[in-house]
Length: 293
Image (cartoon, rainbow, N blue to C red; front, side, top):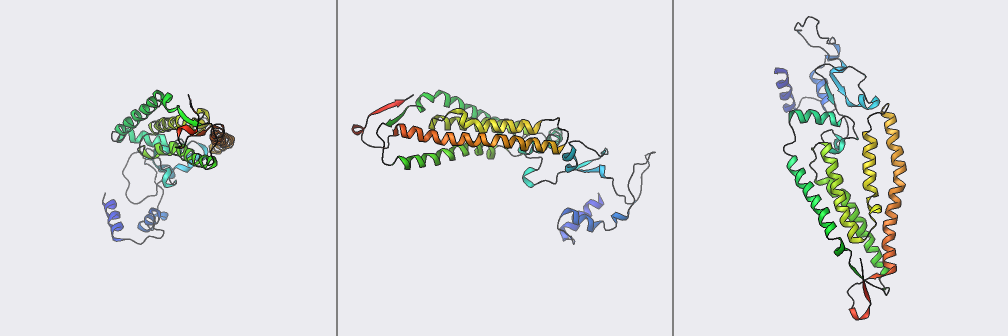
């Protein structure tokens, strides 16, 4: 404890640090550590005096696991696992798993020590809200689908088509991004991903009914997310290289389908406008109207 307090003091006074990170500080604080003997637990349990270097198994880098999807170096009883990944892929974020296979292990430790009492109420509120959106959208579908349109083509049809394409594209993008940003970042992945899928489905249902899109074309990306999660979470890969190849192959096969669905979604707007232009505030006596159900 005295050593730890002294290290905090050295941090506060600005001890010289070769690289400005934790590794440089430790190398500066323990300059002769590499010359110390390796620590091995005494067989008789006696207390050792002096400074020792801990074997690799006492502090494992997560990258060792990602290579073979298993620990090839035995860990001691006091092992520490470090996650030197990008800041947005740290294991405490719900979206880091199954991208990082060890994410569930980290959250299991948190569940046993801290729990998720601060995130659960927010998750429940959002889930109820999304379910309500889906229910209201289903009940209001006949009303949303009653759209007045003009049989006579308008001069500004191309402008209308361009505007609708932009609005539709941004609406679909919002349906898949808004749930991601409002979910509590440190919630358990097994709660975060279902909540994200529920939220994106709820918002996508609004887009489908407003723009009269075919559900499959809008939800192709949604099903693609589910497939990607299943591919990454598959637990029986031989090693990390095979897993990476599987994810790449899935993305390679799925990308054309998502692109085709987007093209079909945009073309459906053009077909709708070319068939019967939407009414844009002109007098009712100049046009013949009907309703789409």
